[in-house]
Amino acid sequence: MSVAKKAKIERITVDTRPSCQCYSMGSVNMCQKPEDSKIDLRQEGSKEGYHKDYKATVFIVKEGIQNKRFCVIHKFASNNGFICEEKLSERKKSLLPEEEFTIPGYYDWLSQKMQQPLKATTFHMVSQIQEEKCHSESYLSHNDEEPLRNDAHTDGSVAFMTEHVPFDKDHFNSNMLERNAPLKHFNLQLMEPLAFLSDYWIVMGDERRSLAYAKAAATIKCLPFPVTMMEQVIDLKGIGTGHSLKVLQETLETGTCREMVVKKDFEKYKVMKSLTGVYGIGSSLAEKLYSTYNIRSVQDIIRLWNELNLSDERIKYGLAYYADLNSPVPRESADKIKDIVKNELDKVKAGCTVEIAGGFRRGKLSGHDVDLLIRCNKKGEERGVLSKLLKQLKHRGYILQEKMVKSTYDDDDEVQ
Ligand code: TTP
Ligand code: MG
Figure 1: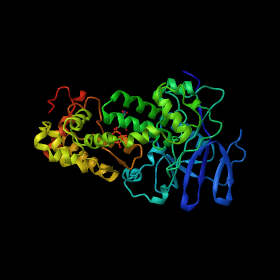
Figure 2: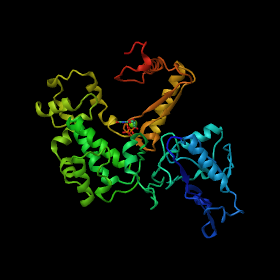
Figure 3: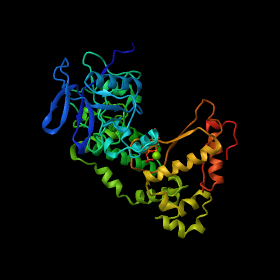
Figure 4: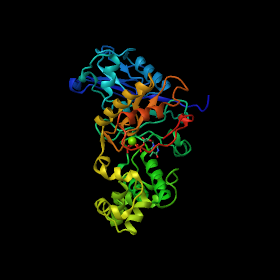
């Protein structure tokens, strides 16, 4: 065995109130609280306290759960008085999905899968899986059950943290790929200046600095606890020893960061931000427009268009669709785009699937773009699919302007 690593599910709580049917998984507890219809199944060393009269039926959604983790959850539920149904049916009272699968559209997808509509109330649920590090054993390995997760609740509140959960800094530092970056994490306020500075420097044309702040922000985002002291962030891989630490210290001490407040208001930053919002204009062209041509707004570019001699064809489209391209894409539009792509994909290669990926998959309600993941049934079938799909979309008039990076899947194809 690699390293002796184990996780245990601590609790499954069933709330049977009609208005609030939810299941959550945490510590192994078994007892009943009739006063609020909450059945708390408690196991303290043995199965004493297990309430025999109550048999809750659960369906644990496999999607999004690692196989081994699924088995642990399944076994735990069975051992503790739940009836685990193998197949999803309408009579199920509650579902137990992973947090990120409580996203809008998920139930529609399930309905489609079952080929029947599902009653909304049946699927009102929350899942929260808390795993506790076994004190006698070391942490979870990559191939074992997942490490500690501390996702946010679906209602927007931040996930709770049990007091006894230790944080292993060394493990966090040496297993970057295992880090979990939930959408709603414990350190939103602390991360904000780092995320802003990353954006600031990308807009101002310093990618190296931007990346350093982006890495620090991502590190803070992955911490499974709210940071209260500098000791908790010093020596964390990703934060570095430089300016990010100072930003964090100031934010911890004062609740904000002066540098962020001042920079947010810089005239040049505000102008550069709007100029780089034009499709086809990067930070170096924006800098040139700002410094050489005294451009101060997108309107200035339009006004001075004939004098500027901007040769990049994309900029015309960027200006024409400026407002549209700078508006967030709602989930509904993403779904429509996905449907269009799927429809056209079926014409060039039957049997492939299209899924929405990126931020929407993590539960965002809007995004700056739509990331799609296309899967083919067999290895090798993906060859040429992307270029054929793009040609088809173009032929159907769905593509106004394109910038295509040659894909490794399309080695033998002519790429436009
Ligand atoms: P993005 O589309 O840039 O980000 P997003 O979809 O999460 O959010 P939004 O579009 O609303 O701004 O990237 C798509 C995915 O690519 C992102 O979810 C994760 C991955 N990604 C990385 O792994 N590293 C990166 O540096 C970036 C930018 C993205
Ligand atoms: Mg995206």
